[in-house]
Amino acid sequence: MRLEKIILRHIKMPMKAPFTTSFGTVDEKELLLIEAKDASGITGWGETVAFVAPWYTEETLKTTWHMLKDYLIPILLNKEIGHPDEVTSLFAPIRRNCMAKASIEGAVWDIYAQQTKQSLAQALGGHKQRIEVGVSVGIQPSTAQLIKLIKGHIEKGYKRVKVKIKPGYDIEVVQAIRAELPDLPLMVDANSAYTLDDINMLQQLDDYQLLMIEQPLAPDDIVDHATLQRKIKTPICLDESITSFEDARRAITLGSCGVINIKIGRVGGLTEAKRIHDLCKENGIPVWCGGMLEAGIGRAHNIALTSLSHFILPGDTAGSSHYWFEDIIEPEVIVKDGYIEVPQSVGIGYAPNMAVIDKLTICTEVYQ
Ligand code: OSB
Ligand code: MG
Image 1 (cartoon, rainbow, N blue to C red):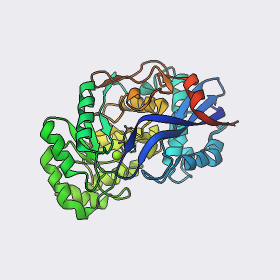
Image 2: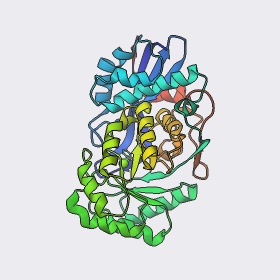
Image 3: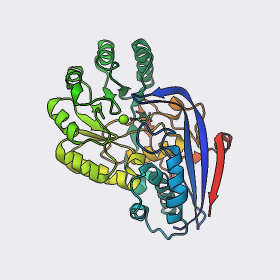
C-alpha cells in the first residue's frame, strides 16, 4: 500500500458521565481521527487515545498532533508499505510517543485488512467470535452511589467490575462493595497512587478476593512492583508501566506482575500489542484489553485485538452507550449478556458515522 492522503480531524465528544481516577477527571473526550487514503482507493481509520492533560502518561492530544504532523505522517506519506508490521520499524527512530504512533498504525492495519479482504481481527490472527467484557467505574462522590452504579452494570451483564482507588478511598470502599456483593468478580485500579510505604493497606486488600490490583505503584517502576508482588497474594496487573514488548519482558523476568493490561495506544500500536500478547501467552501471564475511553474507531480496534486467543480475562471495552450519547460509528458497539460479537466483515467492521463526525469536528487538516 501507499498512503497518498491523510485527513486529521480534531473531535470533541461530550461524555454521559465524568470519569474520575486518582489523578484527574475527564468530562468530555477530545481526540484526533485519522483517515488515511491508500493509492488504490481504500480508506483506513485510526483514533488517538491521549487525553488533553498528561496525567495518565506524558502524551497529550497536542503532543500526538505535533508528532503526527511533523514526524509520523511525513515518514509514511507516499512510502510503499508491504505489511503493517513495517510501520513499527519505520517509526523506530522516533523515541516513545506511543499513542501518536499507534493512531496512524491502526489506520494502516485497517487498510491492510481491507486489501487482503479480511476482518481486522482475522488480519491480526484473532479467532474468537465474541469477547467477554467488563466495566471500569470511576471514583464516585459516595460509596452508596458507587454500589448503585455497580449494581446497574451487573444487571446489564458486565462480566467483571473494576473500581478506581486512591489514598483515602480504598480499603473502606472495597469492604463496602464486598459486604453487599460477596461474589462479584471485582478488581481495583490505583493509577500509580501508592508507594511501598502503603504496603499495609495493600496487604489488607488480600482479604477481599480481588481478581487483581492494577498499577498500584509508579508508572515507570517494575522494581518496587516486584517487591510488592512478593509481599501480597493478589496478582498485580501492570498498565502504565508496560509501554513496549521489552517492558513486558523485563517485568515478567523480575516477577513484577501476574497479569498485564494491554492498551494499543500505550504500547505504540497493534503490532507491538500482538507481540506482548504472544510473549504473555508463552509465559502464562493472563492478558486483557484496557480502555482509554475510546470513541468507536478506537473501540473497534480494541475489539479486533481482543479476539486473539490469550485475551482470557474480560477487558475494559464497555459498549458505546456506556460512554456516549452518540458514537462515531455505525452500528454502535453493543454489549449483550457481557459479550461483544467480533465483526466478521472486512476491515474494522464498523462504518464511520460521518454525520456525527462532522457535527463533532472542531477542525480538519489534510496532508498529501
Ligand atoms: O487506567 O485503565 C486505566 C480510563 C482512562 C485512563 C486510564 C484508565 C481508564 C479506565 C477506563 O480505567 C477504561 C475505559 O472504560 O475505557
Ligand atoms: Mg489502569
